Picture 1 (cartoon, rainbow, N blue to C red):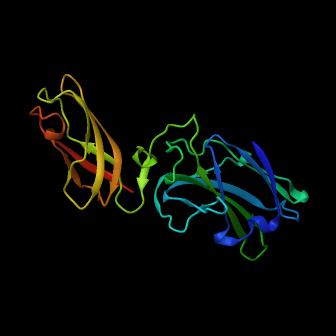
Picture 2: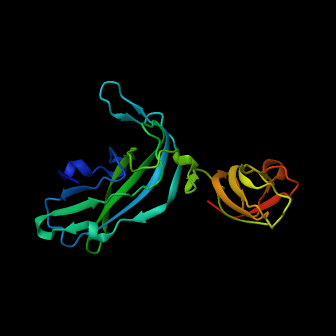
Picture 3: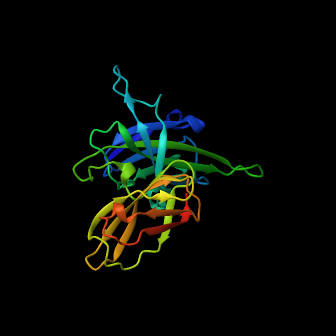
Length: 254
């Protein structure tokens, strides 16, 4: 755990004010914001969400990350709130202590990755009551580039079940018509089916038991799907035992 004192110009800068740091998911850091005025009436809040960048380059001279050609390709879940107990308002002293907790991202990371890099965005927001006028609301963002260590699963984030590709129509939940079929071939299969619509990229894991029952999970959500679209998982891709094809129906999308 580390501490750092930030002067006013270090964190006031509007929408473009983002501090980028590389860190391990297990890292926790403490910061003190110095407003140089009584903040007793201010309110503070913090949220976070993890995005995934396609590629991150590094400046040869400074060694710092460069995002000139970086695109955000997806994300994990929705914005989450950091507990209020991580923020201490010191009132008339004009300072606020903020702890960025560990494990804001718990998914996989590619070791020494420059591609598919998870970046947790922490937004620290303060509201200054302004009497009869609208409140003054400002914020500061941290971009925490998540780096692999031995406590993290070494894998590609975009293959994680919780990863959602950026865009419209990522398949979130589904139903299927699978039933016990003794003609199925026992085994574990990864199947990209045939879509009834324009959606592409959804992939499913299919576990076929010895008695012909199946367990189906989504492993890649794809993009371009609509609620009600169907995806056919063909028996030819599940051992070719002669069992019935399985129809997956998209229930919700992102």
